[in-house]
Length: 427
Image 1 (cartoon, rainbow, N blue to C red):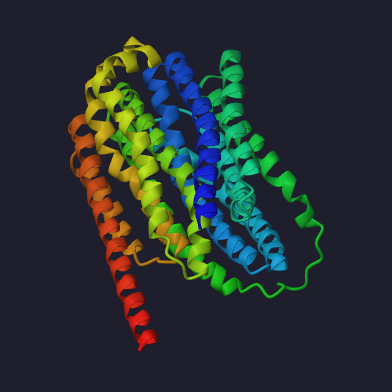
Image 2: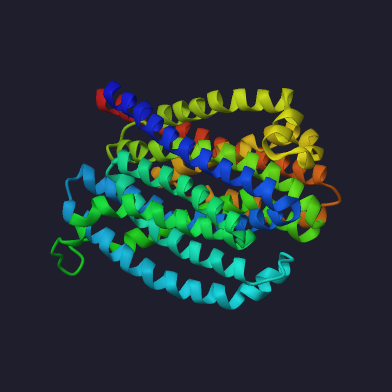
C-alpha cells in the first residue's frame, strides 16, 4: 500500500509538472494576447476560449470513461478489451466530430452575433480546434488508464507550449484574433502527436466483433460522466460568456483577467485529478478504501492554493500591472475576492473525479441544479463585475458543500457496512 501511495505522489508530481509547463505556455499566451490585442479584443479571445472549454471539458468524459475502463481491464489483464475500446471509440469520435464541426460552422454567425464578434472567421477557427480536442481524449484516456504518465505529460505540456509559440508568430504576422485562435488549433494538433504515437501498436491488433467488450455498460457510464463534466464546464466558464454578452467590451476585457485566475486554480485540480483517478478506480475495483486518496488529493490542492491566494491578497495591483499592463490594473481590487471565491468551485473538480472513478453518479443531481442556479443568478444579477464575483463564490461554495457532504455520507455508510460485515464474520 505504501508503494501505491508513493506512486500517487510521483504521478501527481509528473502531472503537476506537465500541467505547470502547459500553464506557463497558456499564461504567456494570455499575457501576450492581453498586452498586444488590448482589453476589447482580448475579451473576444477569452470568450471564445470559454466556449471551447465548455464544449471540450464535457468531451473529456470520453477520456474519463476510457481511463476508467482501461484501468479496470489492465487490472484484469484484458488486453484485447483495451484495444477494442480504443479502436471503436476513436472511430465513433471521428464521425461525430466531423458532424459537430459542420454544425458549428453553420451556427458560427449566430454565435458571433451573441458574443458581439463582427466576423465569423475566429468562431470557425474555434470549431476546428474543438474537433481536434474531441479526438485527443481517446488517446489521452488510454494513456491515463495504462498509467503511462510520461507520454500523457508530454502531450499536455507540448500542447500548451506550441499554442503560445504559434500564436505569437501568427499575431506578429498581423492576423490578430484569428492568429490567436489559430495558435489554439496548432497547439491541439501538437498535443495529439505524443498521445497517439505510443499507441500505434493498438492499431495493428486483429480484433473480432467486440472482443467481449460490453459497449452498453461503457456508454451507460459515459452519459452521467458527460453531464457531470458539462455542468462543471458551465460552472467554470459561463460567467465569462455572459459577461461578454451583458457588459461592454472593455469591462469584459477586464473580467477576462479574473477568468484566467480561475482557470489557473482549475488547472491545478485537473493535474491532481489525472493522477488520482486511475488509482481510485483500481482501489474501487479491488474493493479497497479510496477515501484516504481523496483526502491526500485535496490536501495537495490546498497546499498549492494557499500561497497563491496569499500572493493575490497582498499584491493584486502589482501582479495585474506587471503581468498584463497598467490598462488592466482597474480590476485588481476584485482579484482578492475572486481568488477566494473561485477556490471551492475548483476543488469541486477533485470531488467530481473521485466519485466518477468509483462509479457513483448520483451526485450529478446536485450539479445540474447548481449549474441552472448559476446561470439564472448571472442573468438576473449582473449590474457590476463585483456582483458577478459574489455569485461565483456563493454558487461554488454551495456546490462544493453538497458534493462533499454526499461523499462523507457515502463513506460513513460504507464504514458501517464494513464493520457489520466484520462482526458477522467473527460470529
